[in-house]
Length: 274
Image 1 (cartoon, one colour):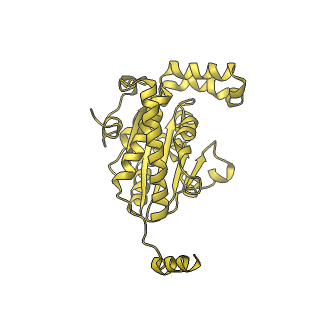
Image 2: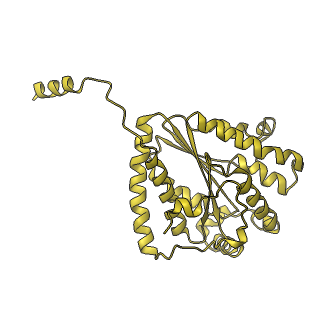
């Protein structure tokens, strides 16, 4: 069986039809087995993130995109929460402020890029400016078309300078989105998540799917790949993303730095104190 890395990675230039991808795919796994595997992945992810932090040679940028209620917050809590907050930052990108609109479209994201040794998680990202802005015609199509190439150039620049990039599109279907909206209405602990736009934006579902498909076609590259994660089942979403992160970080062959002090001298001091 293909690993999740291969199965869900979007090949550069591949034409994607999201309606042909089963958002309820679960790999034939049962809930408990998947949860057990995810737990092991998260323990390994914690250690690998600690190694990335200690090595201090590279950074990791994780971009999350999805339709409303796609599960970005849940993924951050259940998977990214395994990482030490000393070396992991999460930034959520909402509607741009006046200050942000007065700059180029990537300015606000560039300020939040990870430093060496750090993981940065973008809950939404600079890709919003080729999604929402096209659907609602905030910018002309000619400007949006230019942005795909600008994003690719920027991501290539980051990779060439030591920032690794992994991008996850969390794929749910329209029925699952409606079910999650209803859950927010019925659960007092989730009422605060409800926004008027949750329902008005459903009228643009087909437009968003078309734009996500274009994003995946134009911006999944060898150096900064997109992964389409079936996300109707939250437990499978967590398993797939955690597995991809672990496999990728392991492939970097990171090493702990050599000590900056004379360990033998310090051991002798401890021995003397005894």
